[in-house]
Length: 267
Image (tube, rainbow, N blue to C red; front, side, top):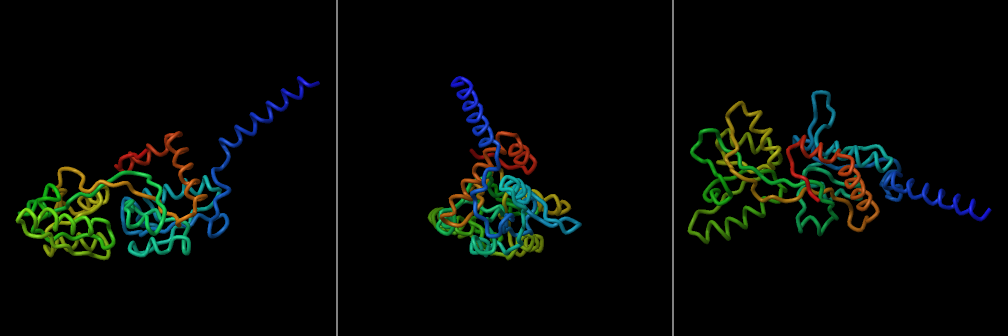
């Protein structure tokens, strides 16, 4: 009788352990709306997020959002928001931001970040034009266009002051645009000399330019991790997202997404 009870106890313990390993990672994670994982993103940023011909939001970040929602036992809801306002809406309009956004100290003062991929910027120039910067050092004296709110604005200002001017070179002129496509149009119109854009998006811009634009940089500029942002102190949701990413790495889905969108994986 005692032996039988011990066997039953061991089986129950094993069953509970296995169930814990495969149960949805985060029933404990509290969402703004029960059963809905709301994600903020700016939907003008392929390949991270954009509208397709049927007005569906497609790209890397919607795919990650859907997979996280699945593990949360929730439905994904994607909320199109201007890039410069995304962080401000966390915990109010949406549960998280997944929008090709770098992890920076400034943003981490406002929200908690879970790194999910690694990328950097490429420099775009007119094909065959006189200005063909290979690195950020060659941007001295160039009028550079980029999307407002990106971390590169600060990086370029710092590089201009601490490298260009200190080495007797002209400063970098920085012009911010509401969206990346507007910066590209300014480049095509020769109102700026170069554009700085995250590498996967830069390649799409070049591919769509019908041979008029090219990637002039020979390596990634300012490589940084991309982050999923959640409200400060929302440890339950942050841990749930980390657990989801770990599960996706274990089953191969993470590697497939990273390869599909030409990014680099992050541990």
